[in-house]
Length: 465
Ligand code: 2HG
Ligand code: ZN
Image 1: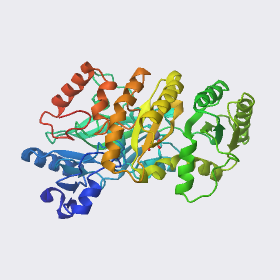
Image 2: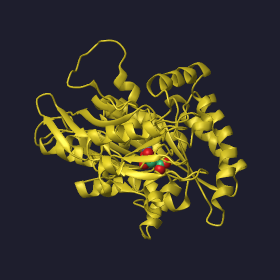
Image 3: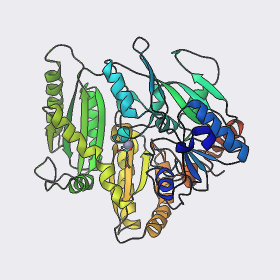
Image 4: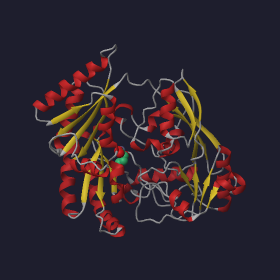
């Protein structure tokens, strides 16, 4: 492998193996890569794949390792193939509104490059400063603006992928229309590194909004959050984001930041709705107009008892501050090694699910704290069960895994999915059957066999090898 990528591209040192051998998800599995290999080009990737295939050594493709399901983790002596040194934007086409880049390009770099020519790459999430394009495609990352722009899947026009044979194939590209049979590109989106290595991508860009206005609302309970959402849509507001986080999330963020204040409101609120609306009008007063409409809408929500208080950001800086209360949640919970559950529910069932979930988790894990936040406008909740400081990780994982079956059965009973945007990886593998039928799993396995017959790529992720 050193012959392929150069001696400085191979790492076998213990600490680095642990660091690069795993993503941000810790579970009951070992982190045990044979080595980390850094590719600098597609031909490096081809060489590494050919060498590993020849020696029967499995490969874990790896990007920014911000994933939360353990998909980018080596557990059994695999070679971790890092794309982190392939971070160049290759081309931006302002007419077609596309951007081509290497797979290791940081998502924020894509956003900034698009912004430098007045365009937008709209996939946005808290980890965008570390996550890389290839990883977000492999996991079909969602994020904060799915309610307006959809998932990563909706923004990928083309991929260059290295297959198990070492061949480089182009899937899609510059064409907006190409109706020629199976869309193989879509197979690789969300495949979690199990089918091949994404080395390059062509992404779609769009016109940025003319502006945005954000507001944070204090909401009296879980069940009212969606009433505010419905009201905002009925009012005709164009929502860029509609998030929720409960009281404990806010308290954790404030504590993590060393802040005394309980938050922007005079009294703690059980739930919060963070709303971002788009400036849709033209002219110098357009932003004021959007703010006025949001104010009117929130005043009527307050009259109806759906919110008890609200702060509408007057400046960009205030808006950034409000957003940090939401975006810092994951980081502020990290020290509790949370048992993460990213679930999707039909909007009509979110409230009923939350009620049932909160009641059952309080009974089943009475000594353990659970917090709820998420992209509620998409029906996407992030349920985080927090390890008490005094509890060993093994015991914590065992108890959470015991509860997880019940939790995912509940998700299924409410018509939901056990993974909204974080994927399956290792974390959700035992529970895949709650969201996918035996026929679907058999089809997925057949696809895996057809494209990666020897099981070279990311064995054991999504389903058992
Ligand atoms: C977010 O929405 C991310 O902030 C992470 O998807 C969610 O930490 C989580 O559970
Ligand atoms: Zn999320």
